[in-house]
Length: 116
Length: 114
Image (cartoon, rainbow over all chains, first blue to last red; front, side):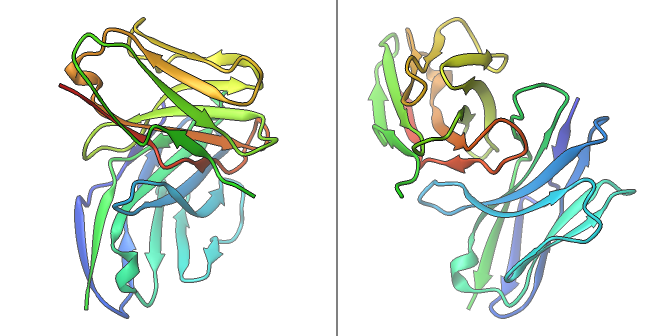
């Protein structure tokens, strides 16, 4: 069975500093994708970044980068130059092919608060 | 173009009432997913459609939950005889095709059962 673990319920970061949000995963599927979503207080899930299990390089999208360590089964999100608008819940998710629906399996999330 | 829309945004139901939650996916998106998000938790999968076919309903918590997508576009999640434990945010997501494609989420419907 697939599982995502986020061990940090809450994190603080000073504005303009970088922060790392942890995510570990478990799967027996050799082909899978890892995602990070941001959920502001308004409730919508906003896609941030994607990493495929066969991708050789770590994914980057603007201020977001994914530190993918396949052997350790970790996919940490790094946010550089934090902004006040980054305060939100962040969810790590996985999608594999163990079943045909390609559903997302989410972790429990990390609440990030950016201090001015 | 327009994103995924859901209605109503908020629903209060008395225990035992039936509710219907609507999802309008992005036009042309083949795949549609429903997730349930309890307070303080990550979303959990409920069911999946490819066009009008419901291919996976393994996440539906009981037979009180029913979903349909009769014409392969709009989907409705129906909960019969609501219980307090059904209180949650119900998220709908769509993706262009089946497979490893990004899922676009709607704003969710917050259901409160009193």
